[in-house]
Amino acid sequence: SMPESNRDRNRSSSLRARAHRCMGPAGALIGLGLQNKFGAVFGGALDGALIALTAGTFVYVGATEVIPEEFEDGASSRAKVLALVAGVVSILGLARAAELLERRAG
Image (cartoon, rainbow, N blue to C red; front, side):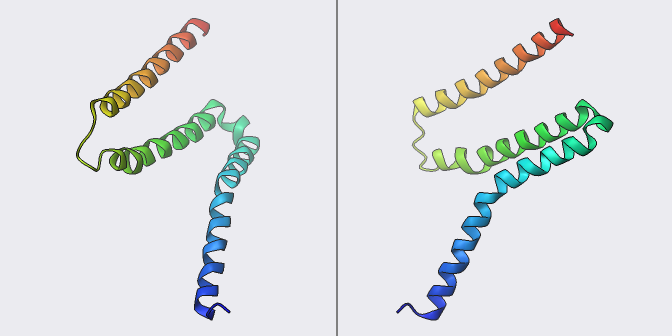
């Protein structure tokens, strides 16, 4: 039989993993609840704030976790750098295109 401390550690780890899996759906439900309750009061500002918060989280994780991990070995290949730059340029292009379409529609 497994020692008591290992069993407790495994149970605790399992509970943390389950809680982590629930964070995304819980955040989505909270956002929907906020939108339903306050959407009419704040209009598009609430949508914009929630989307900006979500986008900022993705940028933060990418900038502090993913990119440094990919380039940590010091032997950054030209292909990796070009892929990173191409990704940034494509997102900037899509943002600009969306801005132009909004101006034309509005």
